[in-house]
Length: 413
Image 1 (cartoon, rainbow, N blue to C red):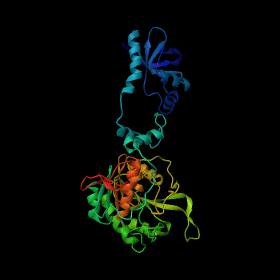
Image 2: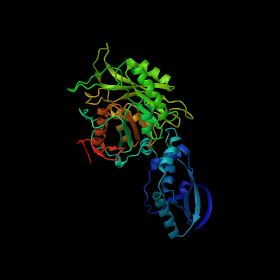
Image 3: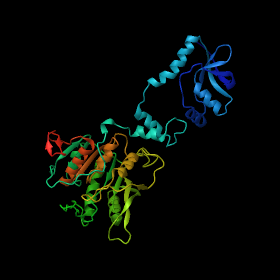
Image 4: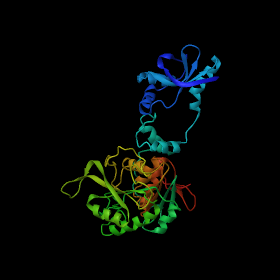
């Protein structure tokens, strides 16, 4: 093979390689040419007549479709055997490589959602950021939540390993409890659904009350939990706090006193109203969005802690879970997951100081993230363990003994 020169050649002087087996996406190549121009020469063979395109046949077709008269070419001389080898190698060798997916996702993130001309779509990028994992296969409805048991298996102090997640039966205002569970790790973000201060008592025959759900102690509870959470979270970590509109000032004050930054209130719009004593029945619920103090660079969209696209809005229209008699404030996984997608990196760590029925953990699991969850009530620790096992088929494991426990049947293996 002999290199001749690099120059622009008229498209009318070029002919495709006969029998070229590759079928390219001409529309994607046209989009790339429109966005960035021709950044790489095609390779053509000077055989004494028309130039034969050995590498770049589809680029030539795309340039013609875009109305170009010329195209930049690397001109070579070679025999027939070399020409076939060059054509085959150009079509095949690119397929044999692989990607560093983390590096690719980071590179694409610099484009700020504008992927025109790259060949990538929004769906491609989301799949890179939060890839599907066969080990995360679900067995059932993510919102299917079992009732609390009358006699729980868990007791205060228990730590459970649920696949990649950790769940502790303890008080999220207790520094020692949270530090022991975190094991030196700091979470990338927090999504929490604290007790609401509505003095709720369940409608089921067991009439279970939710621990720490009294209004009088709510400010102290939030202050204690948020102070501990600051140490459990990375500086500048995004925070999401579900809360009732009637207690908005209490929650915002707690965020302010914790030294956290309040950014926005997001709105969950439900498909049905919630009957109550208000003049106007509620069909929405706010979710406070902000950040812990510290952290380098810009917070939120455009910064290192934003992993979503540029089309997010403050409104999330998600149906209420069909079953919530035992835990009336239970949030659907479909509500939590998009916020985690926006604010937690691939394989990131999510902190939930008020585990409740476990929706945050299930959402994190569905996205390939790991959760660190605190729940005070042993009954609801059991609910989370059983819900996780029903959803994934993975049995919770006692951290102190390493023994798996079958919460579906109430037995240790």
